[in-house]
Length: 403
Image (cartoon, rainbow, N blue to C red; front, top):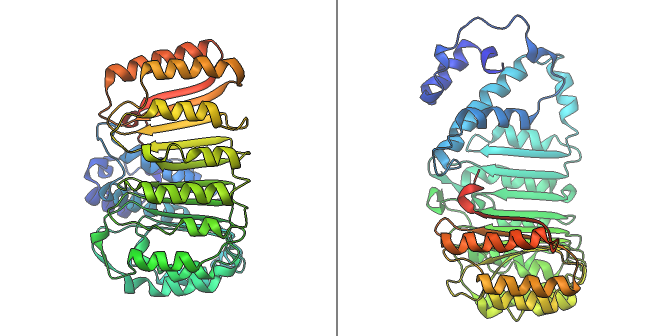
């Protein structure tokens, strides 16, 4: 229905830029009622759902590359314009309302930031800010200096801050201004070659070592690039023991020394933590004992095993012997080879049911996992699910869950 209500100019623009939509073939006869005018609010989830339904192609292996994101972006913009043009009330009323926004998420942020900077500037009590960059062409860091400046100006009220996927477009100096931060997400999973200038990862590490978030409760850091920060554990050291959830993953890093530092830091500084997601190396399996012994409120653990060595059974033994009673949910992510042997899994569940409560057990394998062993593991997990040892489980290849 929303697509039918788009004006001719929008349909032509979208058809020129997204030929597969063929919007020019849609009749110009609009519905009898202008349903848009009856909306009392603009729902980002609704608009995102429309663009995803129209552009998503289940025959493609990836649907989140820059080209697909750009198509969704311009479709979203035309739909937003449709809603804005049908808004009731005058511009002055809208500005008054928009000065009191507490949560702001900016998607597909590109070089046209002048209006965004002004909009952030008029906010009186901005508490949550997410900047999601989009770069179809090379962008220079200097373009975003005004955005950096206004974020620093508003930083003292921010409790939640997210930047993705081109973190080098922002200055890490911002971190030192976020004095009341409770929730931090730094996500870098896009091509650094599209960014000209900006701070190096060494400079980001320098500011991470300076920054302090004594009220921090949630920390998420994700890197799927060849460059990454290594001093994130220092934020944990200065969190005053308030962190409830940590999600730190790196797709292209195999560094047992860093992993050991991270694990030991968590075990010493996070007595209240309930959810933990980290990479784990076989060399660090023994280090996990420190987390199990000190983080006694832990409820969920997600471990990404990056090594090609087959040591998953040893990990199960450590979990069985040392995990706290509160920890009843596990997720394991493994690349290339199956995580556990069928014998190791069966031994684990047999011993678990003797003294522990039912658990949630999830496994995510990469595209190229050994299908035979994958199926055998599924059968064993299903068996112990039927026996009540497992109360909930999922076991799948990552291809089947990619959205």
